[in-house]
Length: 467
Image (cartoon, rainbow, N blue to C red; front, side):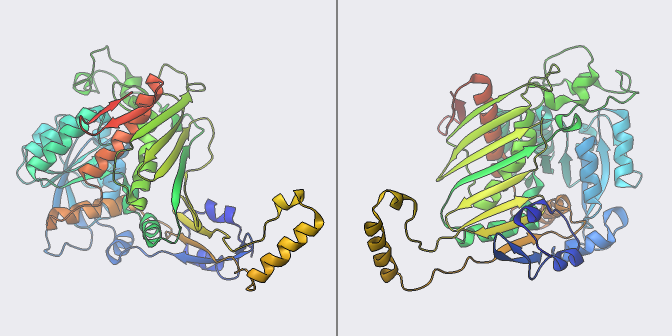
């Protein structure tokens, strides 16, 4: 079977049998393809099979369970609870949410009857709670994280870490002062495919990398956060005033509660929802853990011009140390979600849970195009001299390498497992408050540039974005 590069880029999680079947003898652009199915860690492989949660198999090295609560059990909060069930070292002992149905959904996601409340502060008062998962709207991150740290809890906070630069700085300072473990929730940094990409990048096999490109595109109302409003949504079932805490007061608006990513009072639009994944992946792979020196955005609000604040197309150029990063998110066309590293020796592409490395043909070749303006005699003389100086035939193009995660692999479970492990050992997490803050600031720069129609520069001395 012939496997082309575009086929490799379309593969996400696949079975071992399929991947081996596509392996030896396949060719792409004239080169053989070496296909490797990556293995999760032994612990996570076991968790994927047996499950964890309140009664799952497996324990920490000390036999201790990390007791955690989830503040926020909406879309992402429930996803995190389901992923945490695969991590046997943790047990959820309570949840909080402002909406009645969310609180019921959280119990279903965990699968065991647990206490739930509207007021998250009652959970922080509990002495038996080690850690807090924060899965609330972005503008609420600062208050909840600061309250959790003040209560002596370690914190896993969903991406983007902050709603503003000032919020991020306050969170970093609080985590450091409280000597807490903090994990930002961009799970790709724990993904085995991204770890493999980081290994390849660090080896230097890509050569000089001066351009990285990524995009995350969608073409559905759901992809643009036009979520359905539940039939029971009302001021009686939703704590609207609790939601508006730290936001401007306004009458009850169910669309703002469920579609908060569309509005600047509560979220950061495509930058905070989608750029953040691309940026965290790029930081993880390249090892560049810094705020871009400048960012320039353009875009538009067209198809989903439904009263929202943010564009449905955003494109941003970033200046990072030694490399230009080109990102765009488009909610009007679904063209996948690749991240491409353009190296002088090879091109590396991540798409979903598949990684492909394609060598560049850098073998010496005689000039061709410019000789069209030479006389036949001069051209022949040049070619004779070139071949005399290069007696060795050009090397053949190297193998195309492809790596993929196995079917059913869950990088969110890996990310939560890293957090729980750090709570026990007090060792560093893979995505701490500095990493998360740097990524969030880049998202804020993208929005600043778009709305101010200017280049957004980072002033490290004052820790502010300037136009």
